[in-house]
Image (tube, rainbow, N blue to C red; front, side, top):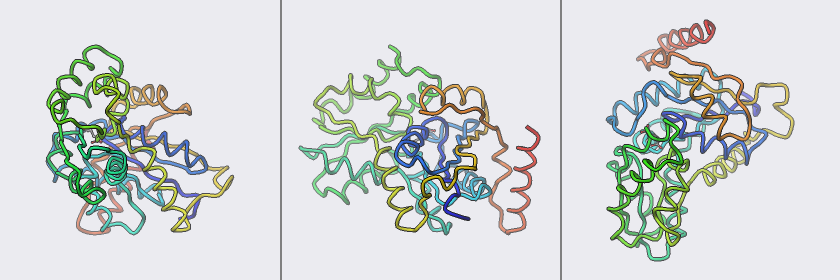
Length: 295
Ligand code: DGL
């Protein structure tokens, strides 16, 4: 694998595109393979075991693309699986929680930080743990917002109903006098204007995408893996894969990314189920190739 190898980025759906677009902006020389698990979302209401199993399958798929680093662009998968996946892989892996906690810990003035995210992320307590690392005094108030992922996937980004739902969820945080709110699900930055309107101008919203892309750039530099200018010129820059509804994903992606995607391929991600032995991994990899070849 050379420095011109792509970066693997994944999420349960379109949410991770908020991180992907920041990587495109900050690291324009880098290639990227994105996977959205659209057949099996939401992740936020599933058990840890299930989310870790799905994440492992995706990692196995990304490895067949010879990625040089992986970004888990999903808070739920980061909360449940980052440490395990890091341990299992020899390439750099980063998640999204640590960066968000670092920023929130630095920008809060009164030490009262709200976190909105999926049920899984909030119940995992990972944000609280990460925030305490950066700001010992911080009080963390979590609120699970399970309906929001579906509304984003549906494309209801600027909609009265979405605003009403956000208001209902934020009601619980209203009395906590928070001055900082972490958008702790990669789908939520797509609702940034709604969150900002409902939370009010005194509350600073934290979207970790910018810091995650920066952290990735620094990590690649440190490991000698950064792609130099023009190095990957002849190669395909960005590739997108999903487990279902490729066309819908493509339209959505084209509405938020700085580049137009021509094609999104659908693959059978279940074929990448982790097995006990290496020979079964090869079988899974071949099954995946067969699926992509047929399309
Ligand atoms: N975008 C994801 C996250 O950051 C997952 C949302 C979901 O599938 O529930 O948690």
